[in-house]
Image (tube, rainbow, N blue to C red; front, side, top):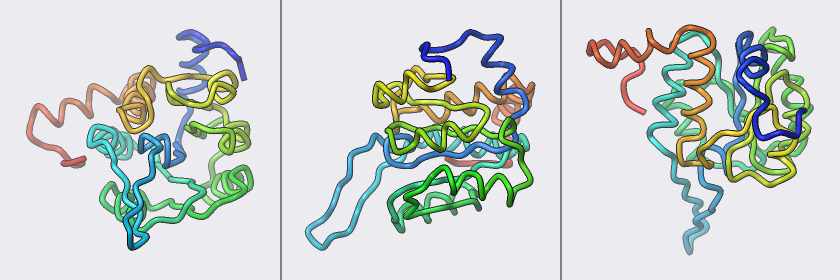
Length: 190
């Protein structure tokens, strides 16, 4: 990993071009990292609709998306279902092993996979793929070891930013955005 904020367009494009599988942490990536717990113990999560829309466009463009998280939450199951994400690993303590298993199950080589994280528990997973991404407000060590750092923070559009970067580099962004203008959204809602 580079240690720079972002390695430059050429290196990012080279790493992003072959991506066929995007794996995301949840807390701090799809959410802002805060945990809301009710008196009854129910955990609440807040997701950004633009991130969801980006995921739907990315899936429609042919890139598979999965979630790998250390926590277990019914809200995450529901969000994954809402977005059409069928790859879901919850309660994961060894994210590197989980990522390697998913790569094997999905028939994807490490250089064809990306992982987006925010905290040190994500570093082993980030090291197991060809394109590692940190959200802007990630732990400093995670940002320093990522191949790419988003401008947006976790739960604030960082995932959408990455989805659009991948589609732009792979030449599918205009087609996905075009559906929105023509009223033909195969991924309507977010």
